[in-house]
Each structure stands twice: as structure tokens, then as C-alpha cells.
Image 1 (cartoon, rainbow, N blue to C red):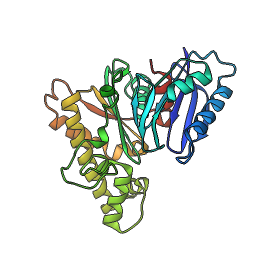
Image 2: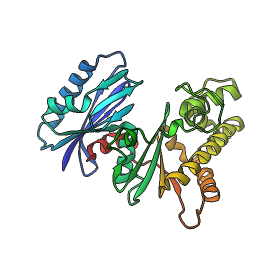
Image 3: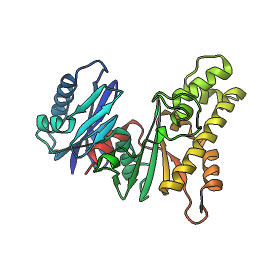
Length: 294
């Protein structure tokens, strides 16, 4: 089946015509945070109509940041694009004349990786997408959790408490995983230790070049990520974790330590081992996963 996938972000949206995990045609649309809802829907659907020409597309799938209600098709709340109770699924579907489905964007990325990427072949896959924040999704037998407000709200891995009373998170709480293991947190920790303004990529590059302080940051990141994954493994028991986002390009610098923590600390790991892998689909995961919603 050929489907349209839309991966909506705070600054841009990626669209793709997808068949069996392969993107046949693609486009990108700007989605500025200050744009009005109707304007973004118009831009998305006009770009989609241009892509659909020449293809027999049967459905559209949408991945949106924020809290999604997959039953009503609404974006209940998204701090990235400043929407509340936006009927995105129905508006996109009506404009395109296609049945449409919607899910959280991190869940869509997890679905893409589970079906066609690093999680292919595993029945139970948990994904963490590490970027400005930390997104997450859990996929079982080819389906992300959805279908009720509670299921749709599941998988907010970035806001599990890692250190009670710890660093202040963007969500307003303290000690969240996101405030320790996001790319933003890596950069902030490096700036604290070195006095230099660095991106997360700069930190990984410096560690690879032998910089001791950068290596300290990566060691702390590996420890904290491993600790979080152990807790998630004991609760969800995925067969594998997939780590996506920009940090996955440097997975060789932290996944060995993370996997050693999983081997050593997960309950019953000798009988039901859990391993973490770097994502394979890159920025295409969200589009492919959205197109694969069912």
C-alpha cells in the first residue's frame, strides 16, 4: 500500500509518499511557531497535493509533537507549535480526500525504526529520540500504544525522574531524564566544565579527539542513559532499545557502556537480555512511521 507520511516539527514538516518503508517522493514545508494553525494546514495540504500526483495513495499518516488524542484526531497540546485541541487529523484528511491517522511524532519514529530500521525483526521495541529534548515510543507487534487518552500519553520517557530534586527541566519539574541526557543537556554540561560554548556534536568530536573534559561529559551521559534504560527495561521489557536523534551518529562512544549497564543491571538479563542499538533511518523515521500507522 502506498501512503502519505507527514512528520510535523516546530520549524519544518517533512512529507513523503511511502511504500513498504521506501520514500518514493518527498518535500519539506516550513512550520514556524508563530504561524497560525490554518496557515500551516494549508501549506501542508498544498505540498501534499503536489506530491500525490501520479501515485495511488490510500491513506495519510501524521506525526505531531505534543499530546495527541488518536481517537478524536486532535493535537491536545503542543508547546513546540503552540496548539491546543487542534483537529489536525480531520482537517488534513478532508483537504486531501484521504482517510487519515495521527500519533505523536516520537511514536511515529519508533514505529518506523521498529518496522524498517534498527528494530526490524523484534516484536517489542522502545525508542528514545535524543535531540533538543528526549522523545520516546514503545511499539509492540508493529503497533505503537494508542487508542485512549492514557495510551496516547504513554511513552513520555524524557520526563521520567532520573534524579529527584535535580536539575530544572524545561517542563518545570526537576531531575527529568531530558535535563541530563538531551543534546541540550550535553552541551550545557560541557560548557560548565570547559567554559566553552559547544554543541553536543562538538562534545562528541572533542571526546573522539582525546579531550578529557569532553570524555567526562560523555561518561556521565552514558551512565545516566544506561540507568534510565535499565528502569525502562524492567518496566516495559522491550527486546531492544533504539537510540535516535543526532547523538546516534556517535553511538560508538556511548552504546558499549550503556549495553554493559543493561547486561549487568537489568533484572533477569541472562534469560531475557535487552540491548540498545543506534537508529538506522535517520530523519526519515518519522515520515516512514507516520505512513505506517494503521
